[in-house]
Length: 375
Ligand SMILES: *Cc1c(COP(=O)(O)O)cnc(C)c1O
Image (tube, rainbow, N blue to C red):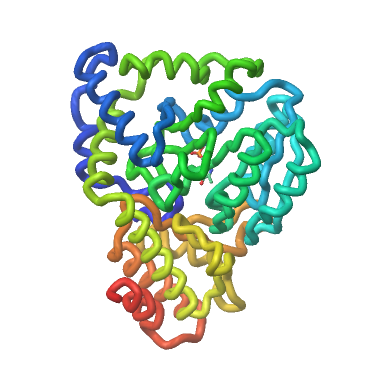
């Protein structure tokens, strides 16, 4: 049982879609699928922009989203309040960009006013990078407000939406997001292997000026091919089958329902942990709909919870990264997740916490989760 923030569980309909003979990618059959998934991706991103597909994990999608629109020495602002924010800073430096960071303590959100102040002070900033849902801490950053400042400034808004697309509202066109990267193993109800990048017209104008080297991830080539329902290189064909099936399921459920479901699962998870007496790492107002980070207590060692969940219940939880290693455990609740998953995971954690000596009324966690799920 996968209760981690990626990879996430894959529904049977998607698994079965993958279990078909691979077809050639330069065929009418494949092009029909490519056309269909492009439309589905635009629907999911709430955008008229191009949404391109690459064979990569989310990080590959982010790399494509960075190197296609910038040149060596460009000044960028990067939000950094967790492991993924850190990754983009490292990546930008690896490509020779001049990075200024906007930081917040892990577990706290980025302050949009800091972005505004830095943007106001420097008209030469080319791009701003923000991790919308910071999966390492379970914090959602205020992307809408930050994007508003970026738009007014004129820089490109580049977003890591890897655990937001398909888990929370990311209206790409309404918010004016120029580059939005995500990956298949998070909110898409798919196995790992596909990366997605939504690209605005403004970003394509930047593409024409951008000089960072690129080849496999040259998105201009993907765009040209996508216009003809083709891909430049051999795509993971069976993952396209999966994507088509997953998008079909998402369309059936509807965006509003998908977002409401994630909110409900998040709220139930948080209520359950509080009832068990385990402190939440992120505040209610900024809590991610994708993952919940939970602190250990004097009696409950976070690492023990993860270990015992695995050994006794065959259930995967995620640990903390960097300085949070051993201090928190993280529960994923995005993608193909329902009430049953939250109740099951809560019951397992509750059983472990009791055995470790945590003092709470037996069944309190499940009862708290159930109250929200049944409400
Ligand atoms: C999972 C994740 C990524 C991408 O990780 P990959 O392992 O490359 O797919 C990027 N950003 C966030 C916020 C994530 O949760």
